[in-house]
Amino acid sequence: MIFIDPPTWPGHGKLWSHLVSDVSYAELHEFAARLGAPAKGFERDHYDIPAKWYEDAVRLGAQPVGSKELVARLTAAGLRRRKATYQEG
Image (cartoon, rainbow, N blue to C red; front, side):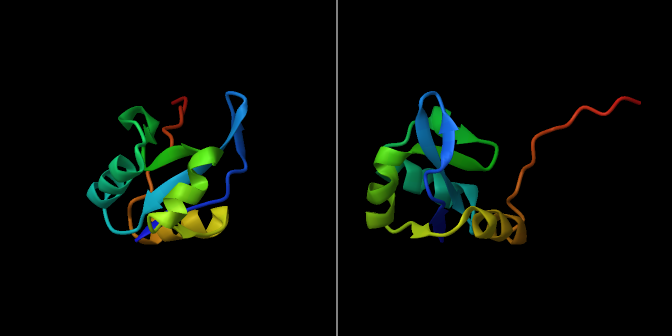
């Protein structure tokens, strides 16, 4: 299933949502293509979606959830890819 959180994430003068799948990256990429999201909008495990596309994503079938639930579902599905962190050693 595809999930989207509210457009509350600021960046580049806009607010953004995150679009994820709890099934596969293939499902996510297919949905994003139907929505018209560019490939460059994919970051590790999600697409960044501008606020003006939020309602379109929901109309196409994305399930609105809070940000914490979105991360929990992504993690439970084994699809969460965290940012690499530098560790001095």
